[in-house]
Length: 397
Image (cartoon, rainbow, N blue to C red; front, side, top):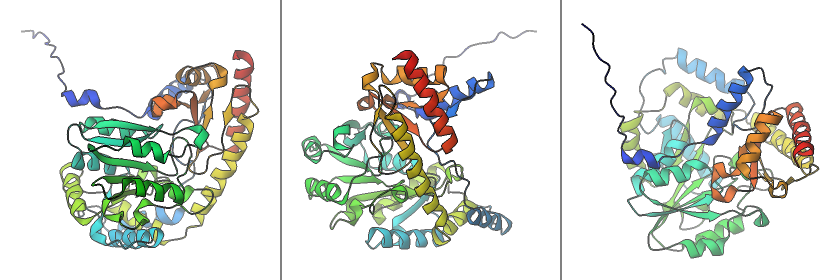
């Protein structure tokens, strides 16, 4: 007796059509496919440090695994890690933080995800930087909110225009997202910018998601958080973590700091989705915060050195114009003088030159005219990428 195969249509929920993606992983997959064909690719697309996780952190995880940290833990995080994070944030942001205001999650993205789900109703407006990390806009849309971009312009060194922010705030504004140092531009909001933004927000019942994941990788001056401004802590959700600072992207551990009543709700979302963050990675994170910090200083210095060298090289290539970033490990290259669109030039550089970068439009419509290159690669490979880009420019411009 034979059975006839029946094809059933996959009927996704409508909300899935509102969910975006992170193009870096798509470009990485394309680059890997080219490598399987025998091509040599310089990877400047993915946003993760090329350094190894510091040995003391790895050893702390090994000790934790052998010590039995292989079971469920509290959904909000291990008490000892929440206490240490509270002390760390209190010290670095100069504002009193209690452990019950900390939620530990598997990576930085869950804080974005949970905050949107907890705070945003249909039609609520969220102001977010554009170009900016693509998951901001994706999650705003997924939660049913209205994404309101605030353009980050090169002529302002990719700093937010505070007057424009004031014009964008409406009675429907529920959340404002800040990111400094910024992905993809490397721009930084200084203390003057942050305090001006706080004045514009005033006493409105608006929450702020302050993404400070690159704060330890700011090249000049001290990072300043809107959480540190008098009267803003109650309305600020600070997003930070270990991926970028300690080269722990694969460990999947980050945290949010927020008022205690919101932390309770974010913990409920954590319980319903992930149960808890892996206990042994939390023990490693504890060592990251309390142990030797020299590896962080080495990475920051090296990323600045590479950024400067790559910017200097790109600025000598026909059609490219680049500002020196002030933090993180990205170079956001202006390619308007090439006459090419952002996606077209990024695709061509990958296919013809073997250099993987990301079109600025991967970070929103205001990223047109730019390509993002990650300098999280060796100086040797960065110099090879410059050589290939110059050859491409000489042939195509």
